[in-house]
Image (cartoon, rainbow, N blue to C red; front, side):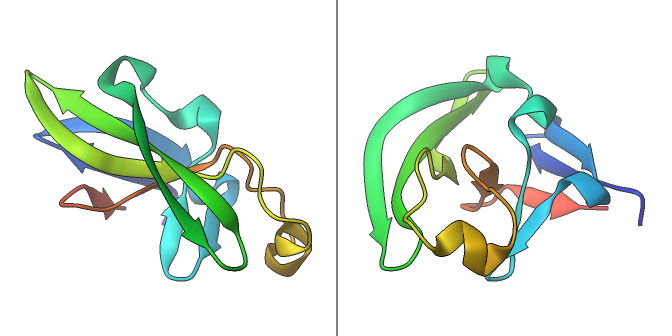
Length: 103
């Protein structure tokens, strides 16, 4: 397993070597440099994790199709959560809502 890709609507929206990814609670978090930003639009949607902090979301838009809140990230993880994960995951992006993460 050399690299992982996030795919939605038949388009690779993120790709990175596994060594650059961070695994948290079963989700792969991709570094900002691996994101194809032209597919991402800021969302005003937020959720809160009791130990990671407030998550912000992106809508993913490919070929005119919108996946609302399809990607999330933590701009400022809560104190202690980076130590718990053992890596700084600030602004790393994770996916759900039908976005596939594959080798």
